[in-house]
Length: 268
Image (tube, rainbow, N blue to C red):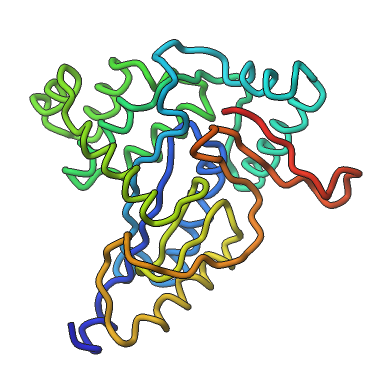
């Protein structure tokens, strides 16, 4: 690829997410704002990848807050502090956040995400499903819900039926997780900018913009968009992240609080 072609090509951002990840819910509007500020969809292509938190969890639907309470050894005050901080950050971005929401295995939701991607609808699908989960406490793990969500996007009914009744896109979901491992993902959300710079966790809009600008500067010699190639992990503070190995989420507490040097953790 020539230098001129590289400069004119849209910058690609690969981001790994899970529907049930509160940190991903916080990151989405920030990344979207940064993308719009840096030229929007005509200059930047965001590709959302599947990354399940705790893929071994079964299909039993439970209350997410119960997991959080368990991680804090039944300490109600600490668990509520964790969720209140998440809620404050979400609401500061104009998003509702309900602590009592369903939690279960998200593998089928990710299969439907890949179905939506095949029709250029991945962004809309992910945004709607996360909004329904965190703002409305909808059971997004239910097959009937996933069918309805895909139908609303105009995806052909025969493909929706195939996805609902077979293991369609299962390998694509697993492949996404494998790519994240190769890319060195240590938490979600995990974003790779132009196959050169990685940003783990939820950072500010300004930090996302800086990553976009730096990736553009670094791409002047031309590049390919293979997320598995080596790149630099930017050392910027994050507000929250979810560990893909343990399913533990951590949120940075306000500096005004006595425990400002610590992070509250919770299983989501």
